[in-house]
Length: 189
Image (cartoon, rainbow, N blue to C red; front, side, top):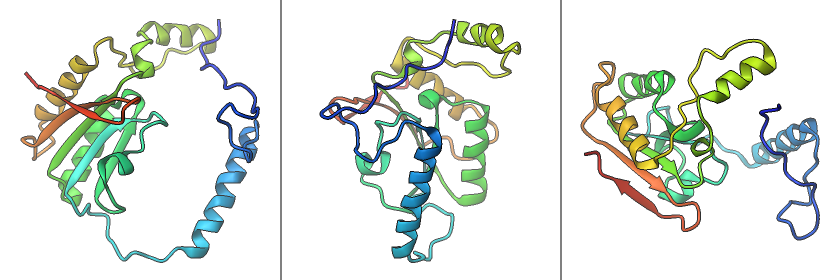
């Protein structure tokens, strides 16, 4: 049994594919490098340091449908953006938030999960399947969930109870609807 993600259909006119797409991973990376070269031709140093202007860190899912800067009206330099599968608060997220707050001045934390998340369909059995396939059990938890709101609440609680974070009062959680683009705030109670 393979546990790899379903692969997209080959590019065909009208199916939402881009004409510059190529199926090979190397071609995709080459396209990204070429895009960076074009970007660098027009790039000017904005003269910012690493401290976010708005003193906020955003923890969100890595889902490609979430354009956080556009959805939240953010500009370059406004925030720290920390992403992982599901946007769940793990030990590594706490590590990043601790550095963000203690070394770089953030004070507020926004947590964003979203509808249609891939973690809604996984279970911790995923780790067992990986072990059978590759011969080694992952040291990390999948952190899957069935209830978006409850997982946002759990993530808020993890931030609010971390002894490493000096700023735990301004922590708010949301669910982003991928079909409407709207955020819905989750009551922490």
